[in-house]
Image (cartoon, rainbow, N blue to C red):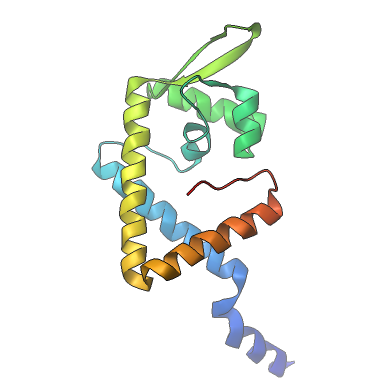
Length: 157
């Protein structure tokens, strides 16, 4: 039995679940710190799921929940918080009075642009750490792996 424990701990630092978990935590901390510096101290990582899935024409709750892979309950909570922060507005859908349309406010568009700047800084940091070619390879590989789980995922780079 002791031999198995030694093998497990010997390879623990390369365990994919552990690596993803640590990387996700580091990413979240970087993003939240960068946005706090830009005037969004109350920003939560869960907001990305909604904000990054709203286009200029707006989208419905259902469309965003499907694209973001979040439950309707989570969407409702996030939408309420984003509306109270004046980052999105909810209007009646012009083609379906039963449906709500979510759109970014001016403040929301500004925040999304700030988020892009934070992400570009992080990408630059990673490129410097591992090299441009290796970082591009990492992004392409990550997109392929994401596509295995979510075939509808189409990365744009």
